[in-house]
Structure formats: structure tokens, C-alpha cells
Image 1 (cartoon, rainbow, N blue to C red):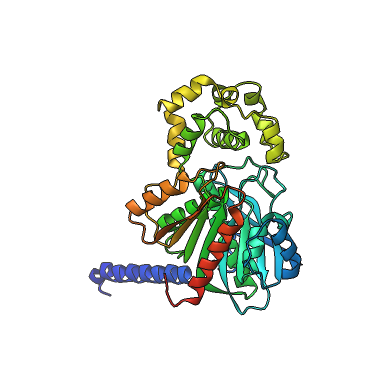
Image 2 (cartoon, rainbow, N blue to C red; image 1 turned 30 degrees about the vertical axis):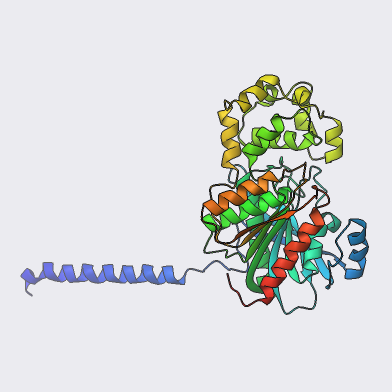
Length: 411
């Protein structure tokens, strides 16, 4: 035996062992099970449950259209099956939490376009589509035009027991994005054929939520979501400008909205500044008012429309002087300005709106154009206020979406 060759032999054996180990590890890595796309678990957008609730026919809805002042020509064609959806999204701490929403699926169509409809401001926790589909009549109507429609309740409403993060961009968008994910999972599990088209629409708070959802989808999830068209209607997009305009006024007919915004931000950012902003007894009572058991009218009745009596004068003075940097910074951070959208956008707004000022849509329109927005339009509804503009706005949005579905143009 040649002992001088032993070290070389040992080297060969060691190399052989290392090769076997590497190949084995690679084989094990390849054979690891992949996440099931029809049943992902422990991720934002996980579908927890989709429970059949009830069905509505076009005939049943027609009476509601007349009662709520829907414009002549607004058609509804399909019976829809309605589902209560439970899914997961992220809360203010970045942890997974359960939320809810309603899903409307029209009957008789082989393939469906997906549309997410964002509802307007709701204070009472159970006044949402997952509890009663008539609270999501806008979603039901659009579904009856042939769309699979989801209407997220948002954080703090429906099944969610936290304080609703009113007009907070990221938390609002998360609830929308994750419900779209949950709807796609449902479609995958139940062999519902979805097209590649994806639409967003919403009115009032829903207009704001629609636009911030588009912004976050296009800037953070561009590979996952390719939007076809977006209709943000009557949304409070310029939060700094709107707050300045309101604080200059002597009165405001809906003080509940102001309290909602400040109360939500005070909770999210942990300011503990309600007593520095509001007069008593309002400052002390605000947490109870926003507990989810009262509606807008009940909250307004417990406040005052006189802004001198609602806000502390030193706060109004300092904010208007630009000295409330913390609060103004949060408002600016959550305003969907300084961004150019990729998907086509149509802003629709009543010019006589005294609840959410028309200037909000003008400001965001100009901002999106100046930032390179590829296709942005502003549709004014002349003489319409916040209430009377709602149905016409949806009518124009549906007409626009339908025209894109039937055209050969691809975005």
C-alpha cells in the first residue's frame, strides 16, 4: 500500500461527501411544498370564510333605486348572490387581524370582471354591507351590471372592533387590497372565472379610499395588480387644504366628520392630544362617541356646529399659522397628492358639495396631471351637492367602466 497517496485519497473522499450533501440539500429545497395559491394561510388577504347570505333580483332593487333618487337610465340586469366575507388584513401595529366585507356575484355569466367598491363614511359599526346588503347598495347595483363586486367594511367596522382609521391612507388601502386578494382566492377555490380587468370605485370617504388604494397598488404592488380604471368620487383628498378651509369657517353642519378624523389620528399616532384640540365637554366624550354604537346624526347631535365652541381657539390659531407641524404632517402624509397614476382615473364631484368641497377633486386632479398622470379626467356635476351627486356619479362611473369592457382598448 502506498501510504504517500493516502492524503490525496482522503481529499477525494471529502469532496465526494460534500457533493452528495449539496445535491441532497438542493433536492430537499426543490421538493419543499409551495404555498397553495387557492388557500394561502397566515398572510394578508387570507380568506377565512365566505358565507352565502342572500340573493337579490333586479326587480327587488328597482324600488330602492326610485326611492333613493337614482337617475333615469341606471339599469340593473342580473340577480346577485351575496356573501359575507371574513378575511385578514394588517392593523396599525402591522399584525394580522380579522376584518369583513360583502361580496356580490351576478348569476348567468361565464366570466366576470372584478370591481372593488369603497363605501362612504360610516360611524355605526353594523351599518355595513356584510351585516345588511342594503348598506352596500352601490356595490349591489354595480354587481347587477355584470361585475363580481367586493365591498370591504374596513378596519373598525363590521367584524372589526378597533377604532376605524378614518382617512388613513395605508390602513384604508390595506383593507381594500386584501379583500381583492380574498375574492381572488374565493374565485380560485370555487372555479369562478375572472378576467384580468380590475376596477375601483367609491364615493365620499370611499372616493378617498379608492384613490389611496390605487396609489399604493401602483407604487408598492405593481406586479400583483394591474388596474383597468379607477373612479374616485367626491373624496376628501387634500386633507391639509380641507382642514384649513374648515377651521376658517364659523360653523360646519357635520362636526362628526371632524371629530372622526382627529380621533382616528390621535389613536393611530398615539398623540393623546384631544384635550389640546377640542373644548370640553367634547374632548372627554369623543372616545365614547366613536365607539361604534352611534350613527352620524346621533354623534352630530352630541356635538356643536359652532367651530368656536368645538375647537380650542389656540389650536385653530396655531394650525392656521402653520405651527401644528405634527398634525399637519400626518394630514399631508395621508393625502394622495404628489403622485402620477398609471391607470385611467375619472374624478367625479358635485360642484355645490358643502360636505366634501369640490376643490378637493380640483386640487388632486391638478396634482396628478403635474406629476405625469397618464389619463386623468375631472367630471364636474354642476349644481349637485354631496347627497344629490351620489347616484349620478355612480351612473357615470358604470357607463365608463362598461365602455372600457366593450372596447378593444387595453390599459
